[in-house]
Amino acid sequence: MKKLLLIICLCFTIQLMYSQDSPNQLNDLAMDIYKSDPNKALEILELALKISEEKIDKNGIAKSKNNIGIVFRDLGRFEEAKALSQEALTINDSLILASAYNNIGVVNRNLGLYDEALASYIKALSIYEAKKMERQIATTHNAIGLVYSYNGINDKAIDYHLKAKTSFEKLDNKKGISEVYNNIAIIYANDGDLDKALDYFKYSLEIEEGLDDKKGMAESVNNVGAVYYYMDSIDSALVYFNRSATIEKSIGNLAGVAASYNNIADVLLSSGKTDDSKTYIDSAYYYANNSKVSTDIEAALINYSIYYEYKNQLKKSISYHKQLAKFRDSTLNIETNEKIAKLDIAFQTEKKEKEISSQRADIAEKELSLNKKNTQLLGLIVFAALLAGIGYLFYSQQRLKNRQLQKENELKDALLKIETQNKLQEQRLRISRDLHDNIGAQLTFIISSIDNLKYGFDIKDKKLTSKLETISEFTTSTIYELRDTIWAMNKTEISLEDLQSRISNFIDKADVASDGVDFSFSSYTSEIGNLQFSSVEGMNIYRIIQESINNALKYSEAKHIKVSFSAEESTLIFKIEDDGIGFDLQNTQMGNGINNMNKRAQDIAADFEITSKIDEGTQVVLKIKHS
Image (cartoon, rainbow, N blue to C red; front, side):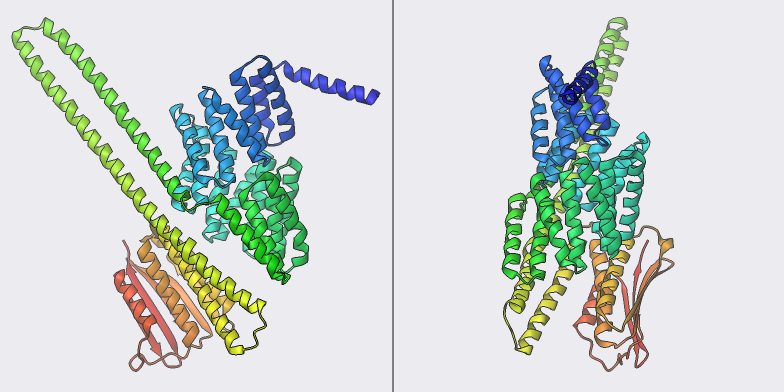
């Protein structure tokens, strides 16, 4: 009884201590500590809300509810977070509105509602820009970049992230810089540049550890683990994923726990530890459903399907695959990217129209001021000066009108250019999406059907089994080529660095798949700088090199295949060499592969040459001019 009385007194003392502060002070205090101690922050915010309700302070109520929503969002309680921020939208305080829109945007992004997320971010950004709030503008730019990144629009994503990075560096905002590093690293990881991704994730982790931000540390640790996983460093990946799960549990972030358990399950499944993975999949699915994070639910369903496939329980595997398809249909639709593009166009157009209106108002004010001055002069000067003044007035008005017309024409041209670029980007996105969603899905279905035939039926006919494997391998190869095409279509330009990375990844895959053949890849192009190709040029160069390597693997019986990039003056040189059996160029009929390489080289105005000697190997050289 005495112990209970002591606890009640202690709680009353804490409440009395905080209640002496105003709701605004309590809100500020809570938001200063919510990253490191979310539970204490919630306790303070509930007290601020109670005081505001007693005073019938509508702004204080809205601010407290929205801040509670922000803490809930960080803890993965997304539905509650969204509802509280929506309640805060009922007042007229622009800063509270902007914060609420921003929080709703983050929640919608995590729930997979990307078009709604972008709409909320744009509303918040308009308020911050009007008030010239640099930190908030940078934070919102960073968030918009994430939406584009999740939808595969990497060029725009990086643009927005770099805008945010520049602003955060001016403000010396370490947390903001860490988040930008983290987001750029995700893009590099998705593009296959794992070394760069790992460096940026570690930069982010170092900053978060310096700030002692548990939430930020958990995210960065998780991301470092993911990169190690993709680099086949399984033990390192498990260490980082387990560390991430521990941190997320300590702060009560259900969504973060789900993501970490999903990642551990992925590692265990891929490394053959199937039995150990089931516990982690169950836990991930439980936490993901509680937090309602779409990406974590999808990941758990995929892991279930793979687990039961490994266990040869094909009915259960197919059942979870169907659940996955049904869930995706409920959260995503093919119009998402189109809505995002339209919202961005509307936002940019609205900004230009505001600029036009502002300039018109300035011109009108100048005209009014000039008219007043001329009226005063007319009463003071003689008839001759009056005539001169009238002439000068007409001249000035005409000049102002000409300037106005010139500025309006320039702005119209700029709007037209933006519109044209966005329409082209929409068209490219639509085509690449159709390729991925329709053809890609159909090819995947073919592979899945063949696998089901092989595992579901006891096929003893070796010829039929061989034929099915050939069809499956051809279909898999077609999917890889389709991904390469989509990769090129999603880029307006392909840098030499992108091309080198793509070729290096292809060579790594060929090296793994080819026994008895050693590959080497070297590049001596550092003096060229950041060379850019059009998407057509980049794709044709990639296909020529790819076809040359495939021909060497199929026909040359080579033990070594060497690929090199070099530069001579204004010419970029690509070489593919092997030490195989070679062939007689004069007496050998060229196949479709070589004819296609010749045609691709002609299309990009490049020189293409093949030299070969019997028992000495073959060399393919592609030369292309650059400025």
